[in-house]
Every structure is written in structure tokens, then in C-alpha cells.
Amino acid sequence: MGLQLQVNVAQLLKERVGAARMFEVDGPELETDDGPPAYVRAALRLTRTDQGVWASGPVSYAEERVCSRCLAPFASRAEAQVDDVFLPSVDVSTGAKLRYAHDEDADANSIDERHVLDLSDALRQYRLAATELAPVCKEDCKGICPECGADLNESECSCERYLDQRWSALRELTA
Ligand SMILES: [Zn+2]
Ligand SMILES: [Zn+2]
Image 1 (tube, rainbow, N blue to C red):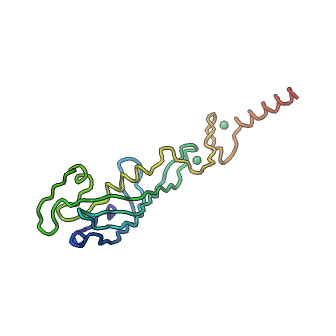
Image 2 (cartoon, rainbow, N blue to C red):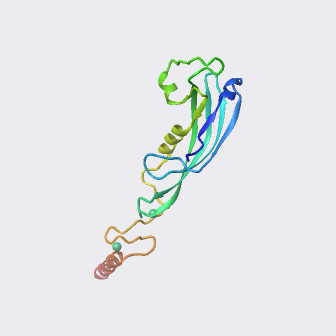
Image 3 (cartoon, rainbow, N blue to C red):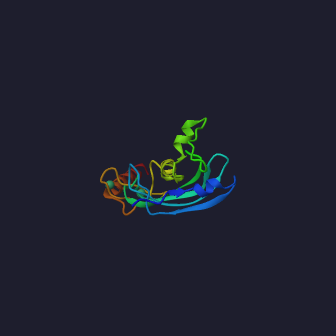
């Protein structure tokens, strides 16, 4: 069962320009092509415009990711600001098919013949844009030792201690 990211806007389309209502999303999961699903939270305002419906408001994505330094899984959170206009494909009162000067726009964010506005694609795009390519579990993550693979956040490994001993020996020599 997917996330409820579809909303019927037939009533809103019949209202005057500027009329608005809230559409809240509270998880559980947004399926994606790559990587694990994300828990989505959004509080969107759907506003009737002269041509369609403007969706605006904050969205956040919580998901488990792998630290690019220490390779440990951690809970990551990404945020974005939704700002999209969705255009109806049919006239809400006559049912006549609608055409637009910029057809690409209409295809990208259309409201279907049943007046259903589907936010899944838009929220996937915002998630992609907000996702860091090289996430870190914390700003000062020390990563893993390239020699022995030890997690340097948990303990220093013998490779480093060996290096330190050589440096102190060198210091003694030059003193
Ligand atoms: Zn890390
Ligand atoms: Zn090491």
C-alpha cells in the first residue's frame, strides 16, 4: 500500500481564484527507483489559480542512509520547499479537454480527467534534489582506517599508533 499522495481537487477547481485548502501528508513511505523508501511529511497549501492548482509548502524526507566516510547506516533527514502548479486536463464544469500553450508544463504536472492531483512524481523530484550525494553521519565523522578498516569513531587502530610511535621516535632524533 503506497502513500496517499493523490487528492481530488474537483471542488477546489470550482471555487474562485485564491481559494485554498491544506493537504497534509504524514508518511509512511515514498517508493523510489533507487535506494530505500523515505518517510514523507508535508503540509501543503493547494491554491486555486486562474489556470489550475498551485501546491506550496514544506516537505521533509526521513530515510536510512549509509555514511560516506564510516559506512555505518544512520537516520538522515532532507527538506525541500514545494512550489508547483498543476493544470487540469479537462474543464471541471464542461468536461471538455483542455489544451495549453506550453504543453510540456501541462504534461509534467497535470490533474487527470477525474480531477485527481497526484503529488508522487513531484515529491520524488524534490527528494532527489534534496538528497546529498555523499552523506555523513555527523560533521566530524572520522571515517574508517584505509589500512585496516577500523571505525575510527569508536577506537584508534594500531596503524595510527604505529605511525605515532614513528613520529615520536623521529622527534627524539631531531631534538
Ligand atoms: Zn560516519
Ligand atoms: Zn588502521
